[in-house]
Length: 244
Image (cartoon, rainbow, N blue to C red; front, side):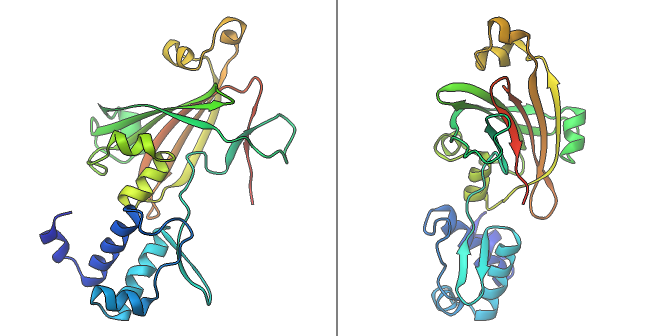
């Protein structure tokens, strides 16, 4: 956003943008407490009411959270796996092993009719495609294709994706956008040749269907912003979703 564009916004929106930028630059990390409203007001040359409105919107956006009597804190970075994990079948209380993420690439393509409809975009709208490989004890277990509206995230950089904890973390840290899962669909599917190669599927395992997950995620305002397809190998592990 240009300086002139920022100045045309209401003062609370300018304060909100400044705070988002400072979080993106790493001044405050997950669960760090922000300065008090009075301190921020003095620092930014705004009234306490203006700062409070900016903070309230950042809480609504999912970027901050409040604790009564303690203050306002930076929300933790969301995982690309959300509430799901890969566990030993039948062991519901097992502590999941951390999956290693491998960034495979960032490219551009145009939205097909069904994906444009899911993301509420025009047909052939430009998209970013992010490809990620997930490993469990060095063995490939999942492959993600993530599609994002390129006009919304026009400055997306492969270096950010390579160094961050995932797509959701990048969008929150760099764009101030926190995603929430809207819908998920699961089905068994034979792996396409390229995906089978990336997942190292050969021999007898090549004849076993993989779990295919389609997931749609939206911003806190409900606008769809991410379409994700995940192929998951479940011949040894169970795709597990825990509910509160």
